[in-house]
Each structure stands twice: as structure tokens, then as C-alpha cells.
Image (cartoon, rainbow, N blue to C red):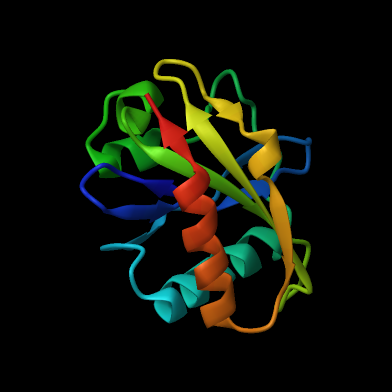
Length: 147
């Protein structure tokens, strides 16, 4: 999940391929802000369900790298341009539909590089409701930093 400086939220869905890569799985889900915990939680729940649904076909990462269509949609020339000044959190859960446990890993965006996990900020929750999930996302994003 990525929060852009002007408040726009992009929830990138990543899925595993049959040959072991984790790649973007379709266009991101978008929200105008993090403000509504219930809507935020429901949207993250949808993304987690989509990510865990099935393996994607094997893909040659050299000749067919993922993300080009996503960058085009965002009108960005590169991932570093897209991530500039953004805060981001990785959200993990293994589930078919409703997760039991959800893990959150806030990152420090270091500019040109991918960023660094803020290990002391990592936490998990036992899933109860979309609103509770949304509040946890808000808390995780508050711990994410950028240069």
C-alpha cells in the first residue's frame, strides 16, 4: 500500500507466479485518502483476497517485466519516480477469503532505493472486522516515513 504526498492511496496487489516471483496483479485499488477506516479496511480485504486467490502464470522477468501497465496508468516513467516522497506499508495475510492474522510492515522510503523495513514498527493483528483492519492500516501508515 502506498500513500502519495497529496493523500491519494494506491493499494498494489501482488501475487506469486508459478515460477516463484511476486509481481503486481492488475491495476492498483485506489482511495482518495486513509480517513474512512471501514472503507479502507474493506478495500485492503479485497486486495488480500485477490492476492491469495491463485498463482499467476509463469513469466519471463527479463523479457516481460511486471508493472509497465501500472506505471503507465499512474503516468510515471519509473518506479522511483512513482515512489518519490511516498510512504508505504506492506500488508501480509494468508487466506482464501477472510484472514485470521494480518501482518503490517511499515517502510522508510529512502528515495531512489526501494526503502528499508522499519523492523521495530512491524506488528500483527487478529482480524475482526473491516473497520479494525482499516484502523490498523492507518496506524501502520503513521509509522512509515519518507525522505
